[in-house]
Length: 130
Image 1 (cartoon, rainbow, N blue to C red):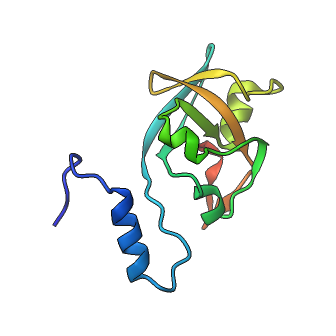
Image 2 (image 1 turned 30 degrees about the vertical axis):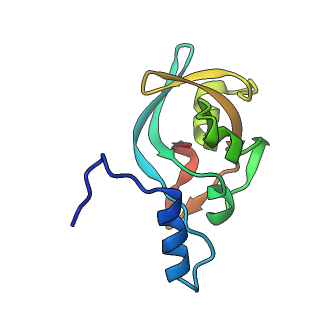
């Protein structure tokens, strides 16, 4: 049965899933969709992922600049994001994006990090923001 968007996973759900999967290392929720990312007059299209702290480790994806989303960011509902390498190239060229404010689908976020380039199964992860 498909759940509606009103029903969301809770921390207890993740703990229950993890306890039922003894061979799993991590259980992390995420939601994704299309995104337009803007900085000043520059714009780029890609994917937006709502993730949990630890996603970078679970996906073996290293931070190139700044830092990844922390538990505190998540708990405090901070409007922060981490950019894929291609977004950084398209929007900032030579400028350091860490600490800058961008718009993702019209909403303002502060960039706290940039990820290293990554490909998986032929998919370039550079056009992802989290």
